[in-house]
Amino acid sequence: MVVCPACGIETPASATECPSCRLATSLFDAVREAAGPGGSSDPAYLRTVADLLQSVDLTSGASPAPAGVPALLDQPARFPSLPPPPELTAEPPTRKAEPLAPLPGLPALPPAASGAELRRRAEEYTALARRLGIDFSSLSARLAAASLTNDGPATEGVVREMFVHVASSLAEEFGSELARRNEVAQHVPTAGVDVELAAVRRALALGDATGAHRRLVHVRDELGQIEDEWATGRILLAECELLETTIRELGGDPAPALGPLAEGRRSLAEGRREPAERMLARAAFALWAILEPRFLEDLRRLRDRLVEERAAGAAVGPALDELRGMAIELRRRNFAGAIGAYRRLKGSVERWEPVVATAAPPPAEVPAGAERPSPSQ
Image (cartoon, one colour):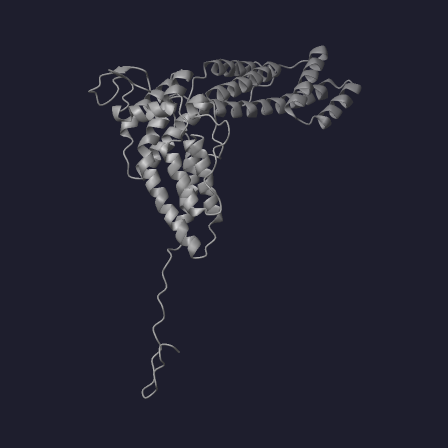
C-alpha cells in the first residue's frame, strides 16, 4: 500500500489512481516531492529555465533565488505577486446559489408626523446624510426657515424630501452589497449575510432608515471578512483551472490530476476552507507535473526565436523581462504568475515576423568582350 500525497488515503500499489481523490498514482511522486520539506537543490525545471534564460541573456547569469521565499504549501495564504492574467479575472461558479432578488422599489414614506416626532426624524435623517455623504445644506436651510415661521406643512414636506434622499442612497447601497453577495455566494456560503440582508429589507419596509443603515454596515463588514478568509482557496482554484487550460492548449491531457481539483472545488463549495486549500494546493502541483514537459518544450521554442531576433538586431528587452519574471515566479512556486508571464512572452514573440536569411547577391554580369576581373581584384 502507498499513501496518496493529496488526500492521505492508503492506495493499493497496483492501483492506477487514488480510490478517494482519484489522483493518478503516476503523479504520486511528483506531488510528494513538491509538497515535502524540499532539499538543497532546485527542481529540475528551475534549473532548465535558468539555463534557458542564461542562454539568451548573456549579460547576466541565472536569476538567484529570492531569500526566504517559501514553497506553495509552506505558506497557503500566498497571493500571486504578478497581476493575474485575464483567465483569472472571470471565475466560474463553484457552487449553486440562488441570487437574492433586488428591492421591489423605494420604501414607502413614513406616516405623517408633527411636533417632536417630526423634529426627531429631521435630526435622524440629517445624521444619516452625513454618514452616507449626502449634501443636505439646502434642505437644512429650508427646514430652518419653515421652523422659524412655524409652518407645519412646509416642515413636513422638507422632512419627507430628506427621507426620500436617504432612502434612495440606502437602496443604492443595498443593491451594491446584494450584487457583491450574489457573486461571493457562487463560491462560498453566505448564510449570515443573507440573514442581515433580509433584516435590511424589513427595516426599509418599515421606514427604519437608521436600522437599515446599521444592518448594511454589518453586511459590508461580513462580506469583507468572507472574502478575506476565502481568497486563498479561490486563488488556488483559479490557478488550478489556469493550469488545466494551459495543458489543453499545449496538447496535453490534464485528466490524471483532475480528481484532486474536483475534490478541492467540492470542499470549497461546501464551506470547508482548510481541506479545500490543502487539496487545491496539491492539485496545482499535480497539474504542473503534467504541464511541465510541454511547457519547457514551448519555452525552448520561444528562446530560439529570442536568440534569432536578437541576432537580427531586434529589441528583445521587454520579452526578456517577461522571461526573467517567469523564472522568478516559478522559483516561488507561483504557477499562475509564471503562466501569465509566459503568455505575455509568447504573445510578444509571436507578433514578430520570422527572421528571413538574406542570400548573397549574384555576381554582376560581364559584358561580352570585357576582361573578367581576377579573384584577387
